[in-house]
Length: 335
Image 1 (spheres, rainbow, N blue to C red):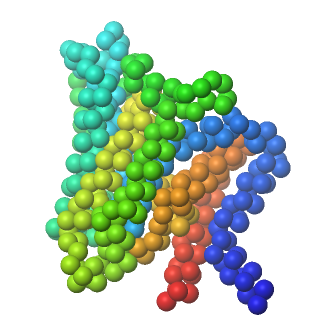
Image 2: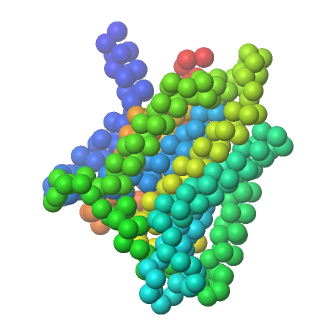
Image 3: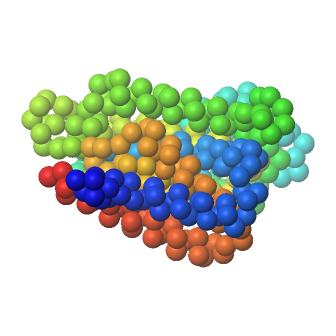
């Protein structure tokens, strides 16, 4: 009986066991990896990824997928950065734009992200296009629109820099002092995670989302307006991508049209590792947070000890395949 319990525990938690072993190996190889500064850096790097992954989790739980997330992040990063440059910067995106309140471009960027998500939701729910194809198409469209915007005169595809201090402070500022300070961007990510948790667990939309992902036909029969709920869900996800794009621009102090490239794959991987089922209907906010932090720890740790980025891609790919494999085994065992 104990052997069966052990086998069940290993099957249920195999991916976490492998990841813990990998991280412990990094620590053994380079003990300085275990420090407050490392934890702080990991949390900062995880912050925007958490917000993107939470948006993707909305879609995955409905048994869909969203390949446009990264490009929406890049689009909204460029939008916010283009309107928040210092007045005397030599290569201003909008030379004659007056200095507006910092919240206005941020709001415009988030609304732009929401509109991208809204379009995804309409295509999926009203035109009955499979989410993979729908978001693949919008991914290309958003990147094309962003590139055209980025290439406008007088910018002509030059990296956007010279961002205002009141904007970059959002990404680099902190409460407290020294290594024990808490960055604003981490606080924002925690607040967003708390709001998403409420949406998942305490709202009608959240209950409908799990029902749609568990069995869409049964959800329709039970009286749930699947089309309307999917539109809401994709729109919320888009708004989260928009916020992530704003924070990414503020954190890095600039933006280009290639920002956010492949972020959606990292987000999907983090969700899967965090227990969000690829078959829909299953997923939690704490699981998504753990998945993102685990992937950030791996990326940071392997870079810390000098592992080539190409080997990192191989390792991440193996982890994704293993995570989905264990997810499908758990799903099969419950049927």
